Length: 275
Image (cartoon, rainbow, N blue to C red; front, top):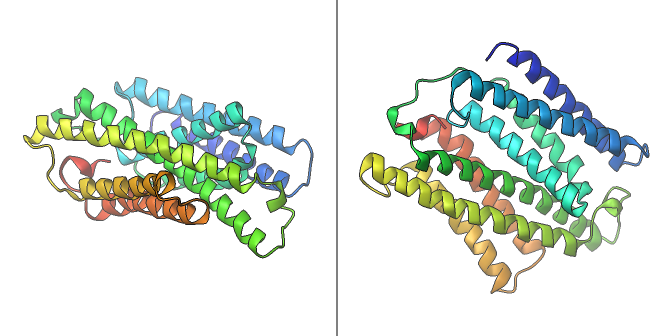
């Protein structure tokens, strides 16, 4: 890790952890000013993460998105950005106590991943690859927030069916609002994923002389694309809404996690082995 990077990383972990605790306490109604304090700490964590990534970029001379550690940082940064954008633009503050713990877990996990710079192959110096990785991580981050929204939907829906609302659930948005956010987030993520697949194909053509080689990463990216395409199709044409599409969204994110973690560590090879 770059000089001072570990101290900065520890600081941003403290910011996100404290913010997570305060968000959960605020959701339980233990203080009126907890949300404001938690949001400020959350934003400070976002700034610290931005500075860490910028310092790595300056130190290494490239935008840090090519190793698994770097993609974890960028994924956390993008998820944080999406959450802050939702809250800033639409007042969707209920997502914080549900997304913040997962975000902290990702950053804590990254602490145990090698942060060393690797010698990148010449093939990595490609604008196609750069935007391929940018868009795929942006898609994953949007799907992650959509997944959290789906969990919130299922939680509210379950308690409504039992006709017994807890004080926690009563503070969450209505099912219609959660379904709306879910659909919008998946639509954006699907658009970014589609672009990423095409960019990756153009890069593969330049590197391998073939648009598609059926590598595990490619196959599972296709599976993810199909699941989310099915989500949008059933949502728009099939008349599916609510609980069924929320569960389909959860299945889609399961393929994202499998591709990002399991395929990366057990099946990835060639140029996909780095991220």
